[in-house]
Length: 74
Image (cartoon, rainbow, N blue to C red; front, side, top):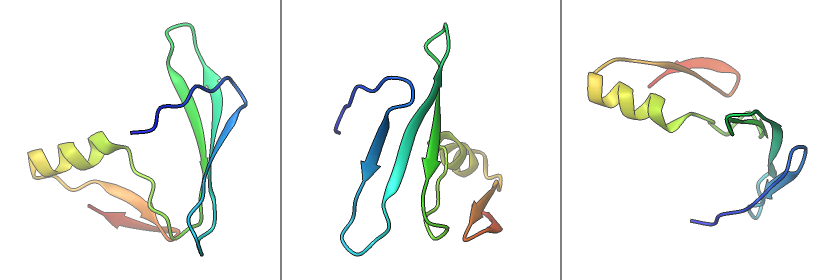
C-alpha cells in the first residue's frame, strides 16, 4: 500500500498505460478528521466504497452502483 499525505484541494493522479487518468482530490477535511474525496475517472471505471461490496456479500443483499453511466447491482 502506498500512503500519501495531502492537504485540502491537493490531488493524486493514478496513471495506467493506455488508460485515462484517475484523479483524486481532497475536497474537505472536517474537525473530526473526516475526509471528503472527489474522484474523476472515465465512465468505464467502477468506483465503489469497499464496505458496500463487503456488506452485500456478507448479508446476501444486492446493492446498486453506477457503472458506465448505468445503474447496476452487485
